[in-house]
Amino acid sequence: MSVEENLKPSILLISPSDIESDIKKIEEELKIIHNDSDDKILKLKEDVQRLWNFVEWLKIAQVQGIWKSKTCRYSDNGKCNAWNVNEPEKLGLPSEVIEVDSNSSKHVIVDKFPNFCIACPLYEAKAKRS
Image (cartoon, rainbow, N blue to C red; front, side, top):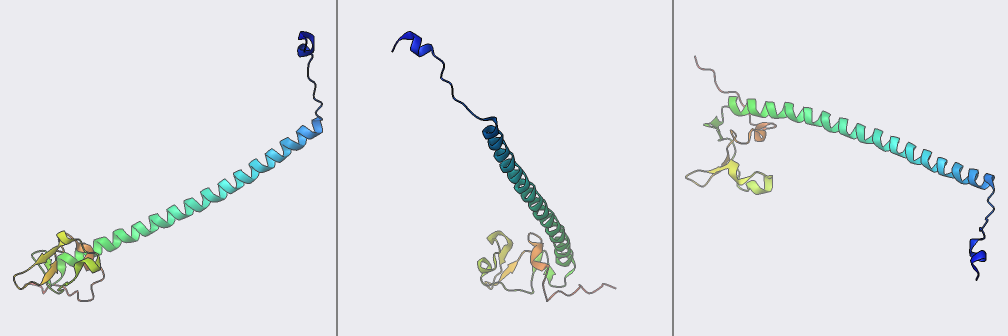
């Protein structure tokens, strides 16, 4: 091959309508991606809002647990005497919130874990001192 042959331009004929068609396809794909993204973002925002609402309810429940742990007649020196929790691990209670007394009964230290009191059916207010 001669130098002159190498210098000849290679010409490829492309129709502008072909390019326009390709551009339109790309634009459509971008619109779909954009719409999908908007839908996903909206769904994520809704999910986040639901989580915030749930956290607010958890805070309310936590306050109730703290209040009950302080005002329950069965709470003695920060320990719940209403329940003997034989298998705390099955209830998901951490070992550091369990106290074993002299007769091997296991009680929850509600000062450390007031959430235990949130839904307690045995709650009774302490008797008022006169």
